[in-house]
Image (tube, rainbow, N blue to C red; front, top):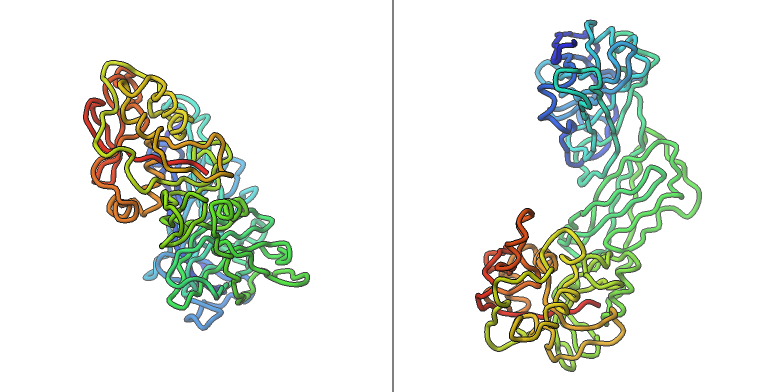
Length: 491
């Protein structure tokens, strides 16, 4: 029987670190499942220095191309060894000692030194994760057998590049690969860095960045400055064709290059482009088209809607019926097939508060993780079928008389939101009830079309239902209580 958590202290003497830089970002924890690490796998403490392969020079103070190693820098090491099996770990840089230190975890028990592990490994790679680099590197140590049997323990690793949100620290990814190890990790550039400045956007606004290359898609939000400029950086594999990459910022497609351009690892590319603002939608139909086209339409939340389907930020002409309360690229969130938008009525469905219904009967509209928690239309239709005496709130929501614009989701009808739909509309206003209250004129508690379900006992569905509360949460309440009712429709 193998014993877990075997520790061996190892110091590897090497040269002082050095390397190229580029720009900054945010840092994620590079070790996942840390709760397992204390009792699974085999731990081997490691202390190393790192040298840049091309000239071996120490990184200098930042001058636009080089930067000293700093606290927060990490070295992600992974590999495979004939005896130790898969191994991986994240080493942290210590500014005092000038070394990277941490723990390497191996699948199998290993009695050798870290130097021997690296030298005799079948494959090994050390990847620099500079401080502020928004990367994802995961170390998972799993056990498929009994707690006392380490035979089936295994280490799985994954590393992927992500976006840099600012430009004031290094984000260059440098790697060392098996083949040169002779007492030090020698790093060589693996990525090119794209420093973007996108102008012509709304000032001090969060915009969505979508960048696609052969390595996949990066989705991130960036906040523009007071001049409407978005600045961010991306690490892209060397050899990638920039002409094959796509970028959109705030829903605006950005032209990267007009001809072929191959990126060189270790190089920094400064790219400034002007965004052509997406045309403003003037109707629900145009808004839905923009959403389907991938445009970020979150800025339309709170716009007024009239009975003809026109929308305006304020002062809508004609008969105002409600407000754009939620937009989504998935009709699952809106709850009616083909819909992308939820519109909340501009007034309550009834002049007085109403009960959800009599207690003691479950109607099968409980809030569980299925379509019924998203489809308020289906729930409300079911409840109103029992009549206004049985379900006053649902009937009032269903019978709200304002005209619904044509051309939207089918069937088109007012209905009472589900718990999830209330949550989506609340989140669209920043999660604050007060923001919804100000925008839509709501006040007090509002029923949802879901019965309460605690995940275990369906008898709870007979007496309780969900409601939106002024403390910005969705809470359960006895069905016999009288609350406000507000209708919505999907478009």
